[in-house]
Image (cartoon, rainbow over all chains, first blue to last red; front, top):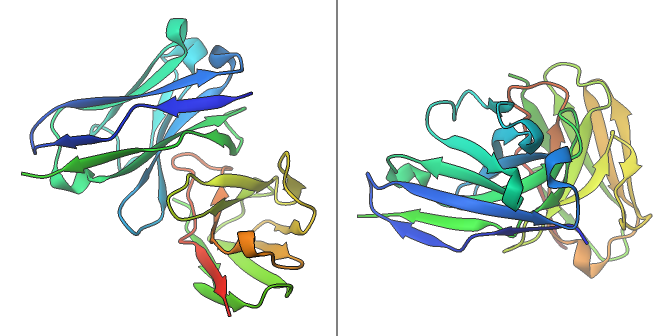
Length: 120
Length: 108
């Protein structure tokens, strides 16, 4: 059974750093793309970026998120990451990881989501 | 960036009725269009990919059609578990792969 299990909810202060994770199981982690999707409170879905764990140099960002976050993966432990170096209140959102079978492909499996709250 | 629009924003339907949701792209995305269902407090779930292919385990009452810039999701006979928000998403062009704003299907 394919599963993506994300790390737990986080409460942080503005300016703090954060790294959240997404662990894949039940499939060949290195052979599928993993992406991150943001959903701000009461709002829609936004692709942030995607990575191919089989070649972690292959990472692509949406323009709105380029330079704001870093996406990485460790194929040895089947885990993808999303990190911030300096959080802002506007980063408060639910973050989902999602698997894609190709670069031009939909997201067929999703993690349960990680709620990030940034507040002073 | 390709802009996706969805109509209507809210659709009120009685159980057992048919629901038709529309999605439009600002330029052609060929057939690289997916539909997702999201219920409150849950992650999105893939329903349709390639504009008209049902994802694994999706009931036959869900169907998709269209290509280019105009797409439709049809739910032939709404069940209680189908009341949710539905998003279309193009994956033909990156960056980025854009979602529509969603259509909320609620109980009439």
